[in-house]
Length: 259
Image (cartoon, rainbow, N blue to C red; front, side):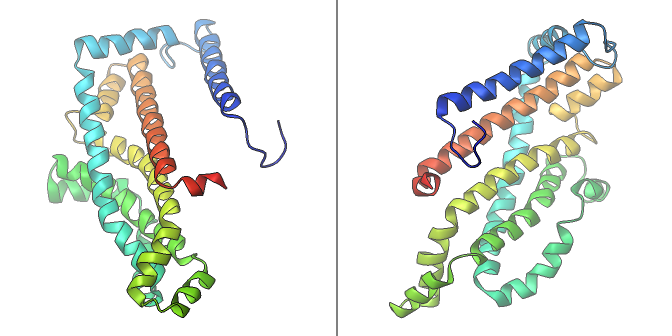
């Protein structure tokens, strides 16, 4: 069970994953229902579940979820459409990398939340501002990660392709991209998770809808049950999207996951 790098059977993997959630909820219920933590600071699982039912039945929480998902997907797709081609160009051509990398390396350390006041000034408090925060938070990370992936391609394969008569365009299309595609897909899967953190930050300020807006309203009312339920919903949506993304990657690049 603890042998390094030894694969875990699918059934055991599922059982281990479920067992952690069971232990987590037992611990949560123990410290809250047992009175170790006051309800004002941490609602118990039962109160949180009831708050979630109220959110769906009375306050139209499903619409907030839809708005937040739309913002995440929209901002992430805009970032990916721009970042992936640029990252491929930087990884494939060192002159392009030398031109863009200093700025991209600088920009990726800038917190997206720091741009919110400027984005509100430039774009108002509408959807453009929310999408811009997610875009800024994702685009530079994707660029560098894709560039590193493509730049790490096997040189011997490139040399063999040149020997067989391939041109520069053919090297990128038929050698670099097929070899890097599985890892690029994994990069996008990871950055999609980061996009969820940025959308909540964007919705905490100047928003009238979304999960982040609901959490802020609940904080004003000191309703920790609704706050925790909103956080749990974010985690569940992220878990589902991560599973679907990973499943799609396995279907598209089965050879990569057989290693």
